[in-house]
Length: 395
Image (tube, rainbow, N blue to C red):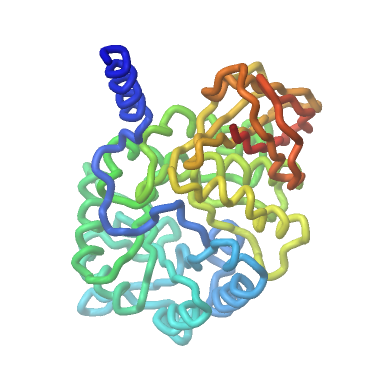
């Protein structure tokens, strides 16, 4: 009995140690799995966004399989606003949105989708439009009246001494007071380590600087490409979980800066991170390769797994890496990642991912969409340069 009791206690302790350590999660009932949708910025930025683009995107998402695959949110990023009136109410850019924001939100909702919008915690947005500093409750009431379901709040043009935790707490309280459930996305670029404090404030928070449309940006012109973000995300996995997620920024799949192989690896790693999957391309006119990546339901299922654990790097040998994510059904998602310039064989041992080496497990290749048989002790695959082989291992 004493031995059994010790085994039970040690098992309980292991469960506690493996549980997310983010503290109290924001209890607004939203984002129990990572949010999925589309954001306008990566493709359209300030100049290209308008009412027509948003409506066409909602039409495409509802009809091209994205809605059925789990994509929900249609989000307008910066540059939808121009100023404030005498009472301080935010003014919509009538050239870009002649029918107003509520009409756009109503149209998105009519497609069975949810609507998101953008603001900034400073005096101005990153695009120079009016921010929400000092107007948080007023703006939140307006968003609720428009039917907003998702708010992204940026961190440009803050005032000297402005505290990120206090600022985002104010907006959280304003959203709650609005009376409408609104998913809250914090975007201060990981500059004040939000994973340490944001779990009870936002449903997601940017853990990195802005993504750029390149595989390895430091080898081209600088900035955060996919591989830079991988390194920034590793080590903070314990802070993510249902309702509160580390955000490595929006997807660049389909925007032209990366190859199909690189885009497939990019999407795979975001799924392994339990990251929000926010497409940032022209989804109305995307290529067959881009569509095949964004609609891979087996990879999406890894991202949306109910356990909500963020994957982590378990082994690194130069440019060859193994990443693993525990799943709710006891399986593991495993990414064999090749950051190098040439194809290479990568091998994962079951002991690398928390299984005994004597285990016999079924292996399914999630991009080939086929079972590769039962394997004992581990699995090996040839992985292309800048590519990934992503498998699900099931005892």
